[in-house]
Amino acid sequence: MFRPMVTLTVLILAATVSAQPAPTDPLTRLMAGNARFVAGKSVHANQDRARLTEVAKGQKPFAMILSCADSRVPPEILFDQGLGDLFVVRVAGNIADSHALGSLEYGAQVLGARFLMVLGHEYCGAVNAAVKGEKVGGNIDSIIDVIAPAASRAKADPDQTDLLNKAIAENVREVLSAINKRSPALTAMAAKGELKIVGARYDLDGGDVTLVPGGK
Ligand SMILES: [Zn+2]
Image (cartoon, rainbow, N blue to C red; front, top):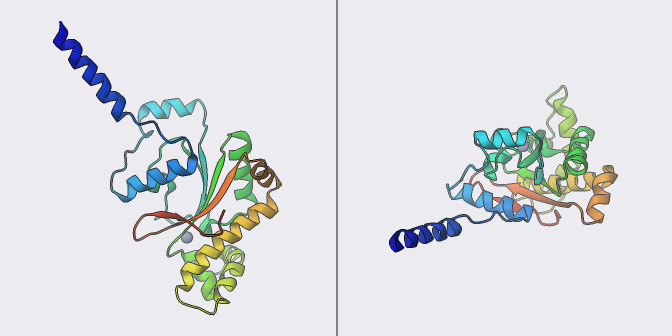
């Protein structure tokens, strides 16, 4: 009788050790997921049928991401998150137009998300078009026009090395400024400590996400 009890105890201890609680801080949780992705050790949590059934009843995403529509920048994959974890708004150039802001206000005010990351990325075609002053036509130009001021600030830097990356960081800061100016609801939540807003950049070569200096 004694031996099975010992075995059971060991099994319980092993289960306790392996079941590490998820970090509660949203940024820590996102960065931990990104570290798993970069290391090729994504766990793909919350992507099974049980989670599907669970979130069908309601959603409570722990973070919001405003990212580019670029097919190489899917937040759920690069942060190793699952169904119901992230409230994601994607638009070319990760810009904050009124529809994007309305979506984010919904995510914060109605769904209760307390964290927002504006996520730019390496090799962004929208920012590159703005840097080059390209005109593509149609509604595409309305996106490039919004990014143009950030591109101009990057081009005003006497040091023109790494121009595109500078413009990408400037665009993230510009979007954070636009959120601050044009969304009183999000700004008020941030002022009260109910919402944390940060800017970040995704590296397409390495897969890692880093915070943009001056972007929080
Ligand atoms: Zn892009």
